[in-house]
Image (tube, rainbow, N blue to C red; front, top):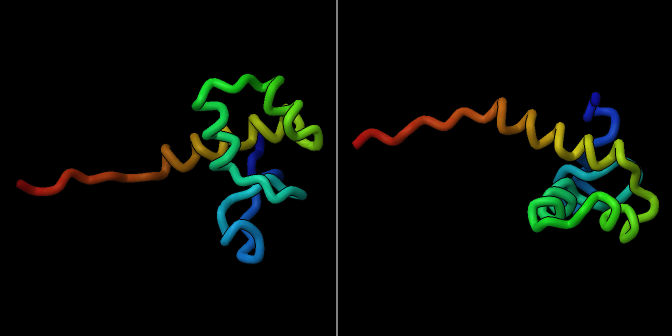
Length: 76
């Protein structure tokens, strides 16, 4: 999955949060729904313009962010 094809940042939409291309749906919304236990089928029924690939792109984007994020412990 090449998430940059489906996840975009547009300062004019959703205050610049990452969204699924062609929608106003944020990656945050989709990940929150998945994290709350919503099934893929349920999400796709709520938003019929979404595809399986869009949901996978959201997960791939989150994976990329976690992989790139570097947290350093504070000194005691």
